[in-house]
Amino acid sequence: MSAIALATADVKLVFDEAMAGKPSYVYILKSQTFSEQTYIGLTDDLYDRLLRHNRGEVSSTSRYQPWNLVFYCCFPDRTTASIFEAYLKTGSGRAFIKRHLIQS
Image (cartoon, rainbow, N blue to C red):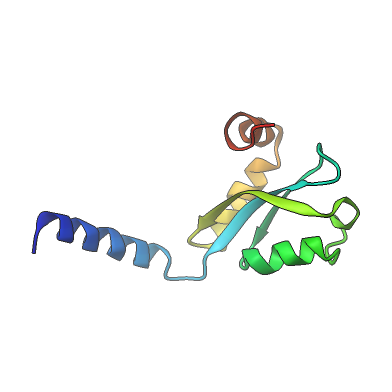
């Protein structure tokens, strides 16, 4: 087996082990109607959660719909995702979002 094949197999193995549990997503939405309104959330099913936001089924976001998904990040477990979500909701995290994740 070539070095490239071995490296690829190693990466896949590491990825498979890291994602062995159910992955969780931290995401950022931006309102299409209210340009300054953003929402930071956490979910195990990104597609379904975005649909629920845009159907008005999430009370905290229903008045600002429709929403665009502007950023998401996948984590191997909910605990790690929750820590990152909490950080993004801090003042420092919001500055990080503006500086690195969302260009206004």
